Length: 353
Image (cartoon, rainbow, N blue to C red; front, side, top):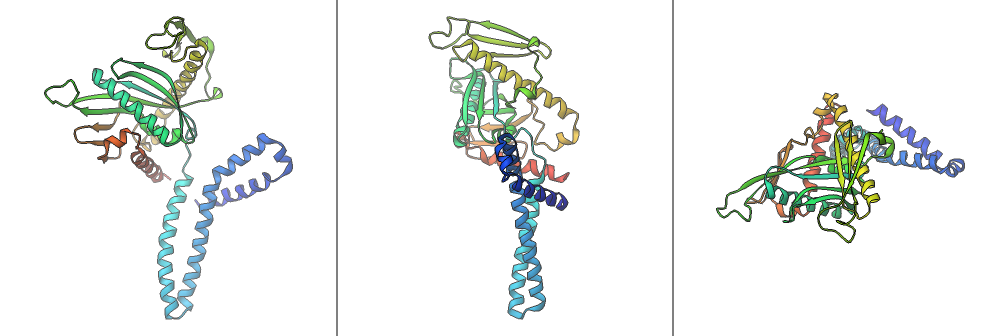
């Protein structure tokens, strides 16, 4: 570990000199690349410097223990105890910082919600989830853009696709993929019987064109008249777009915009992200060790969380965490569980470090 830390520190120092070089400053693409690399290394270098200082302080305290008078030795013992604890903590932090980074962590997110079993109650729960993630994005000062929504007309949604833009969006939301289950008494249930229904969530990183090899000839584009509520153009022109990727059978529809061109652009963005996700899932199946180190499998059918309204609780089944604050959780206050999932994920990866 320490050889790697020394190498990173040396590399950081080299880059520090390069970004101050006038010739490199004039070459903005190269300068920006070096600055980005430095930014990624900086937390590691800073923590390692703190660690080395603590080690030096420990060596001095041990010398004081051998050479000082009784009072100085007593002070040295206290300092040694504090430094030992501090050094142990920093070693753990350094291990976490050195863990391989998910290349998608800094990307924007395409988040898809689909109502599952449970009829209209499942659709209402889908709407609850859509609001929860929208509110979470607001709390994080991320931007959201509705890509597609298919509502039931009764307050529920059969399907919704939103784009969430913001620093680190995927790094936190990627743990939300899976089946979410709700337990509550529907308003139409006169006997007070609790119903169970579900919705699935898929979290995809927004991908660049260079990351997906998409042959336009493989995509069938159909246009049709949009349905549902809309403005003057919706329902009167063929503005809705359906894309079918023939090699995989993936289908994407978009009718949210009045313009066919904008709908087509959004639909292609979603299709590219779904193809990228498909490629990543295929690669992950071949890497058994990596699958074991993830929090859950990320399988869409895996039940990851239960929202129990009568008890006011939300339980995440992957890490065994239960919170009795369902109202605030559904209002976007979901960081406590996400932090727990990240910590658990890091701990699993560190076992193989």
